[in-house]
Length: 484
Image (cartoon, rainbow, N blue to C red; front, side, top):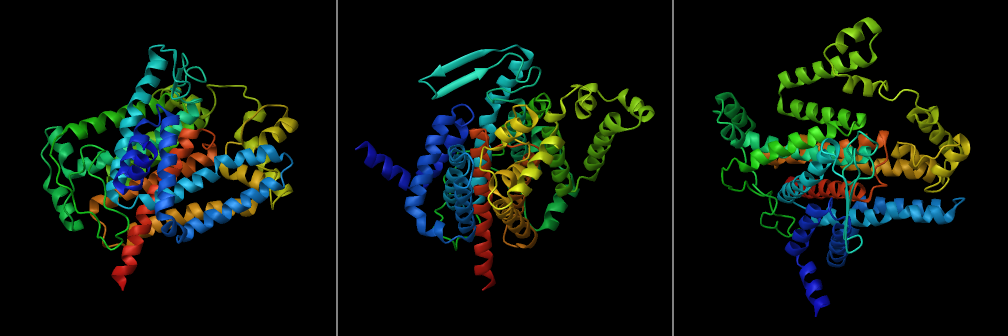
């Protein structure tokens, strides 16, 4: 009876999507429950829509990539480790294929973003308590159903890590959530809710600007759990019209709190990569909005910090009077002097690239970098802090180029859609842009780190990729039908 009820519930499209939202909401707090839920949703989506999934060319590309990874593992020196490493990729390819079919509308993108932002708040709050209030506890419920460990002072000490194993991993999570929360915040601001929340009168210039764009602003959904989206089996359905929602300032105030909290927490992860990508995202949004004053201000602040960190001594000393050492000393490594050469990214990247050229076709096998680097440098290091160099060394250049090509396909088709489509609402353009920006942020993160070894972050990354591609693919199909 239970199996039949579960099967019936997951087979229903709305039920599958609602379960997915709940999984995203609780994923940071309970990875096991979130993973099991996403796994069931993916399984039943494959069972229900396998023909639709198998017809998509991008999924053929991931199938070919899977084959190349398996071949690479077969040629590895340590085959056991290499085949274990496949679990960081192959299951997520299946999840990507399922969710890129399940997620078809911008309404689902909006719901997904809300779920992720709401779920980030307790994690960020506990992280701030970890650093500033000395919170330290370990809580387990039914083994790993709920397993929370907060180390006093962070990991490494002085850097917020919250539930994550390392501050850099937590920073990568915060960057993705920050980009999406800022996109939702801008959506509310453009709708006029932000002006009312702060007691401001909207300028006529802003209103006329929207009229020139040919679309009235959308009052976005005040919560993530809106009515479920229509079935993806109706490809001829036009984009969802603007949804009438109450003009309450509470969603905007919550998003303001979320953006500020996530940004402050990101600062205290002390992650240079996280700082750089968050600033890049702010600049991208400001350019998208046409806010030249903000662009100039951000560029000025960044330039001042960079001069304080790297300019010749007389110039640097001048700027260091005004720029806190917390920023410039972290950028130029004065905060952590005497770092071993083997721990520097440049050394790791050069070694990974040399490995790639020694075995360019099949690589050395997944999870081989740690052993090879320890033998060469006599130091334990988990990865070379660059996903694409790591793949080049461990799986070969062909597999790496194919992987990069598939990611590039998602981005190029997405930005082409935003540029050329005349069937997307203005408000939905901002939302799609936010997801594309989150994908760009994830790619940038993986040029200076490797995020796939944290299960939560890896799953979140593939779900965002799937959501982006699912909506872009559907709009492109509609564009083709409209052109005929």
